Length: 375
Image (cartoon, rainbow, N blue to C red):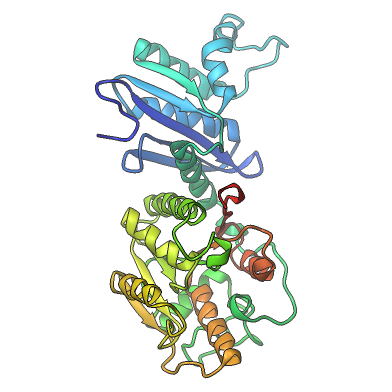
């Protein structure tokens, strides 16, 4: 049974729209479950047009009895309150101004009249924790961002030294940090061309649309044991990965499987059947972990779509460890097309990492904020 359907009752279909700039690139989506959904977008549109389009597409694509659930009072009130007067007044508002988005409203109202009692409408508060409302929001945002590729890397700030994850996007004197050897500087090329060239040089980089995961260690996700904070982050990563997989059929998640966000990301992949690549910085990565954590790490490595080990030798001290992790994170970032950062926007350990990742990926960086109320 599809999520959103109860017995022989109507199918509940959620809709949403998203836009950047208003007007600007936008996306729309509808869904009754992760398996039954659709989305699209436009490079130059408005948020209201995308909200309207989402409802229209949901109605056109789903025959039979349905309940269309939306977080837009503009669309719901237009359908149930305002449209009668608009039509009576020749598509003019009370202020005697032309109704905006008339072309979509006409199609939407015609579809509503054609369907009659088969269709009902409900409103839900947006961003209130409703799983399907969150899903269609994410699907619409993915479509919106797919039209913003030209903005990538256009904002963010950096400067100064970098260690650990900070080194992931800092580079070094224009040298290629992919580990692929010499062959000319890549820093002068556009980011898309840099990635293409790195993949040509480095056979370890897997094919597909690659999304790298970074983020908080266990103490920032509620601790090492199972807990509501980590479970909520895992659920939201599941939804985001599932949404990305609908847009990028060749999606692969890159994760280093470090305890915390990286490990939770691999678990999320398994929940929604999205393949992930385990990127191991060096041998004996688990030497300081408990036996239970070591076993979990080994299980997740075994279930990965593929495994990449970057270095043959293990670091001998803390300073070497930091350098090795910096090289690992640089490889991950340079290989990826997009990134996820799990961060509460307070933990100073990731402040600079966020700035550098934001500069590197721009709109292709997705931020997951742990819910502080669950701690």
